Length: 241
Image (cartoon, rainbow, N blue to C red):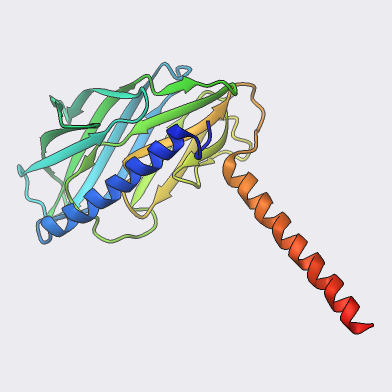
């Protein structure tokens, strides 16, 4: 299943909705605190049967003890469960459509005027197999109802721990890359200037690298450029005669 399949189109639409919600939220809570950074670690090393996630938000302008809204979107068969903020269990309440929400409390840090929220949760059915023998993984991100401090590279950082035999062919966000030179360690990382609503990837079990849609589009674009360059060169030679 590629990004142009019905599932891929649905994913892109949901991500678009999340961006709209982020923009609306940013306007609604202006001056009430911001997200300075978000660091996410996902352990999928158990062959993809479930994912264990740790997500830490560092916040500015948020006092200790302030309640904060938390939301998550549903992607594919993946479901978020066993949510905890620090040591406290967090109950998600279903919203209309494909979303769920909860309330968590900010805790203080050593730096004045800053706070943090440390979340841990499980994702059940994070990976599904498809007809082309590819694995599609969806890892929903629990997002706070706060705008980013500023859209800058590295505001959101994610690390995925996958079985070493898996090879990723494409991902959302784009840029997900192995932290080791050959990827054998099974650790992949990516960073973004904003917090996404999902981290998604496509992988294969045979340990071999497969061309993903981004590469195919790049090769197609390169072929078109070469074609136009060739036609232009032929035209110049004819004019020069």
